[in-house]
Image (cartoon, rainbow, N blue to C red; front, side, top):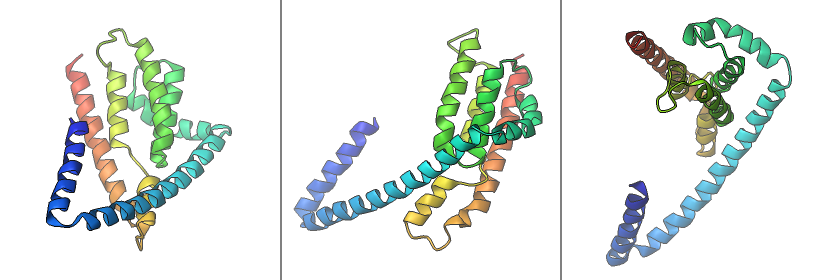
Length: 191
């Protein structure tokens, strides 16, 4: 549907600009926007490369294992019957990447974890309880350092790009608590 709406909006905008004599403003706006897009892309690419590199280094050290051990009680609470060690490790890595604000690094880890969970899923047409909880956790995306938002704010010239950290903490903690609670309630009702 969006692949129809956006081109329609663009065509209507060009037609309106042509008939109202503002076609020069449209072309200037396009080139100004392209400059902003390139600057934003370079900023995000640099941030993404840096944090993915740090995550890759962390995965090759005992740091990730220590973090995994720290969140073990939380994992036992969230996934009480998860016996697959590979899925457990992939979910832990995904959660750590999300907490560190590495959403782009967390995505491939999350896809691997979901694939591993699906392999053990008895009913392939429906998500199981572990998969549902994992989806909720990824959607809430609890973050300590929202790197993408900080990078976007930096590229747009914000005076305090890291000023978003405290509101992000509040929003993601509340989202995680509400999501986990609702999921636990629904899981308990479906047993």
